[in-house]
Length: 68
Image (cartoon, rainbow, N blue to C red; front, side, top):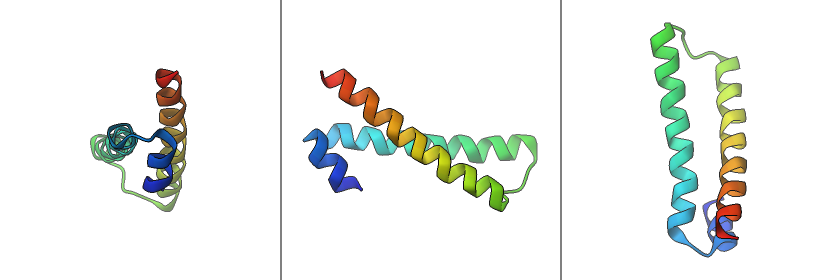
């Protein structure tokens, strides 16, 4: 996935920005579960997978719009 995004943008820094946004999302999920006192369940993990997909898609659209 990293190499495909890197070939699309032809830039290591923009590809790294996409993956850093995914890491921030996971940290936010963990903090949210901790603050509310919830345990990670299978439904939470499904939500994490969906969120990562949405975040990667949105960051790809944002960076491509920024480049043009």
